[in-house]
Length: 272
Ligand SMILES: Nc1ncnc2c1ncn2[C@@H]1O[C@H](COP(=O)(O)OP(=O)(O)O)[C@@H](O)[C@H]1O
Ligand SMILES: [Mg+2]
Image 1 (tube, helix red, strand yellow):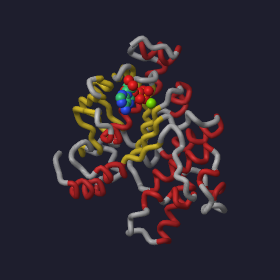
Image 2 (cartoon, rainbow, N blue to C red):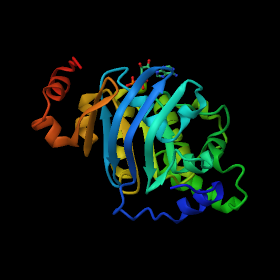
Image 3 (cartoon, rainbow, N blue to C red):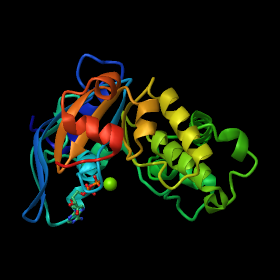
Image 4 (cartoon, rainbow, N blue to C red):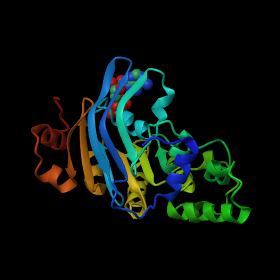
């Protein structure tokens, strides 16, 4: 679907979050390379609303590249090339669109909490700072709502003007998720968001995902098999740039179709 840059912004605004008839994200025959090194091979996947889709697989299997292709962060790398389609509610996000409009729909959270050296308030409202359509009161409401959504409000409401860097790592990661939610995305892309956190903070993020899936499509990369077992609805097992197997969590854990899936889920062993 080809359209001009203004067109995509309007179209994306019209896409109803509740419309679960269309897969929220669909990747079709997607291939990607860094120079001549093919790192994603014939990826066909779909991600639906109200689901936590966990992508697991050994290091170097292409999980981050896949996630970063969806919100087009890889565009900034000159050696990156791709073929195929990634559809957000039927709109090809890889076409010549306004990338900022696309990225607003596809919020990303990284492995290490990445707070800016500003106040908690400025961090939350970062994505809205150049948007004059929000009044001061609306900004306040968004800030409070999103901090409550990530269960951080009670901990920080008395110190909204304090530096975000003073928060613990677990709190910082929840702040990053709140900042992502503040621009009202449809999809949350999380790349090993708990790997630098202690077990208690990790569990808090997992609980948060279980609550947020009511409103978002969640794509959650983890190398932690037990974490995937706790939170996934759907599981995608990747190895060497390919999707080896995908399906419901129960199916992959209890009755996988491929020996490689069984080996990885039970022994963290992979011979792809
Ligand atoms: N910026 C880059 N330039 C060149 N190669 C890259 C770049 N980023 C990732 N790769 C390569 O792409 C492959 C997949 O990496 P990645 O997506 O990070 O895997 P994972 O997240 O599963 O560990 C690896 O071989 C990695 O070396
Ligand atoms: Mg990675």
